Image (cartoon, rainbow, N blue to C red; front, side, top):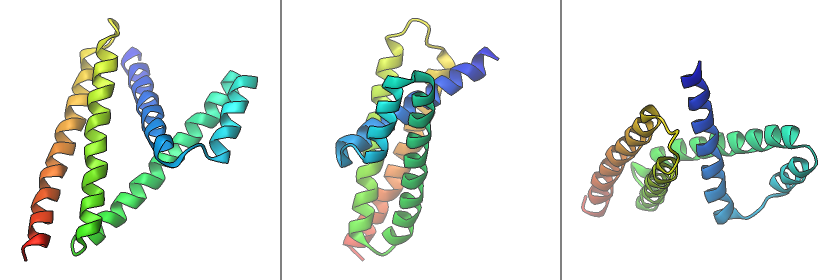
Length: 138
């Protein structure tokens, strides 16, 4: 039970971290501003709105990446954009690992999840690098 709660906290943290990175890129949307105002008025309801917002953003990003993978097979620009996003994921994993390691209550399982995510992203990066090389030199 405690492990599942820890996983939930890690997922929320990563969604918030991901959302923060997206906010830097796209700015505050009206939807996000509304959720933040709601959070100030009612933290429980506001947190629910924020979680929903970031979950929606993550789903949209996942769909965009699926499309980019399809396009990247023949489009160098799409492959480079996908590579940029994967590099951003690696930086996010490293940042999250660094932040969680500051907390003495962080569990080794959580650190392992960050390691697995980074390894998976690095494998994806290697595939993209090979694809980009192939697109540059057909």
